Image 1: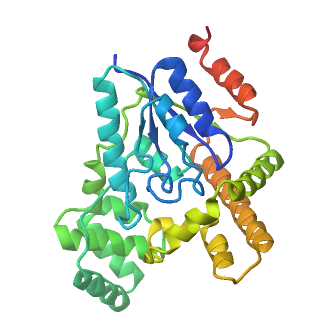
Image 2: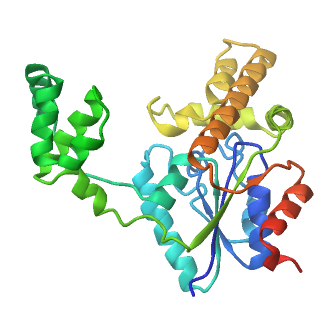
Image 3: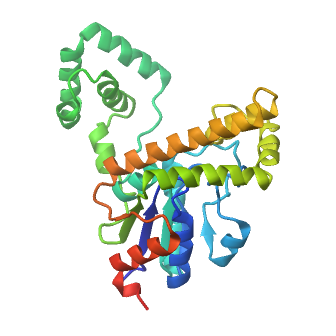
Length: 309
């Protein structure tokens, strides 16, 4: 039987990294990151990446391993995660996948259908065809190439109808076939999962306190160094929560108190979006509702009694 894989998802500041480390130490597991910001080498503090001391306690993978100038897609992370999990399994160890990026978990558990890039000329021709044919005739044409896609796509969903036709026009294969070929999901039964959903007010208070504490440990220096790189604003890490607000302070555009308050608000908003996403996409995952580490661990053990000493 293959070594076990645990998945731990949760909003920012919910305690998931500490829980993952405790589980890894209790089981001899290695930890794999599922966080689209902690993946990058820059902004360790601002993204709340595990500290060097914590990383030394158990092997960590996909934390701080990518330069911020190299934008990773969900698919690229998924392939890297599979490589890490395969290597961990080859060592005979369990794995703990932990993070707050819901799309990573969805790809890992449901797969990710990837089709080739669509040439710009195909996109332009598809848009022109849609305008010329109209919705119904365009759908009928798609049905001749990909009946399943034409049947499942909602009425007047131009974007998805166009995408399905573009894939067929560019590759000669229906989008449905590309999706069926996807084999990147973890096998059913190979993993178990939990999601952290602590009380909202307690979570928000922890978000605020953590960001305030970062000011005492040099986060402004970290932000300044990263801003000095002059990277493309469209890169993923440039959108790290709190970066824009703290960088504005460093440019003299906001007081430190105003920048902190704005960054705290953005962090709370982000935690809310993560929680909402989990409720919709991870509805079947068991929940840990405590925010205290001991309470979380007790709830986790109740769900996994085999781990109880």
